[in-house]
Image 1 (cartoon, rainbow, N blue to C red):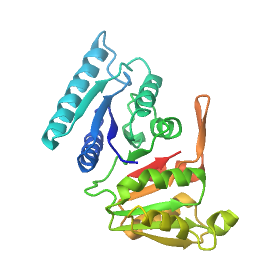
Image 2 (image 1 turned 90 degrees about the horizontal axis):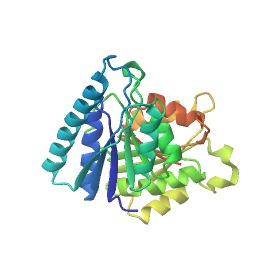
Image 3 (image 1 turned 120 degrees about the vertical axis):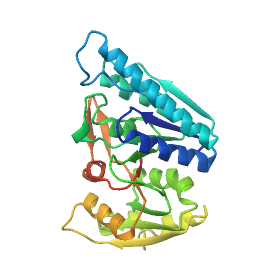
Length: 274
């Protein structure tokens, strides 16, 4: 799959500029159209008669100016959209899901509980990953990311979600200097891994021009999420690729342990597919 249509969520939070910058870089690299969707609720804005509307409109205008300047400088085909979600954070999720289904890649931000102002649902990333039907790049709220996909770690366990994530990531991996495909505790998967865990999927990636190396680790005394983050740090990886495990159930998200752990503690951008 080529990446020719990118959607980035915009909400004027401190981390939003970094998220837009990464989305613009990806659009430039892949010669893709980029759409910015401004979506936020009133949240904890001052309780004035019309202060809510004025403040949200101001943030929308500032975000639009910033995005259009970045896209223009990069020479991109770009569009800025604004969704009227001010009365409810549920509308933020709903509008992002509607727009996500018509693009190749969605870029959203990790939830920052320390800066949560009630304008964006804290489970937005999870909702888009599990309900959008598209690969989602989740960008951490802290850190600088001058590269993306030069040294990637792929979390592999042979599951449907893992297969989706690997194939969705191929456009981001073709120019990588190193791709490490890690099977953690492969003996738990039985026959699903084959005779040599990760070898078959590395062969598949090689046919797409991706230089991938198979690796296995056995670790019973550490959570899977913690182990993947540890390997990310040891490898100096700038991208983690993994399947997202769980399902939306009514208004409550049911997530697998590793998915939840990564979303809370990620240190590099994570490409997730479900």
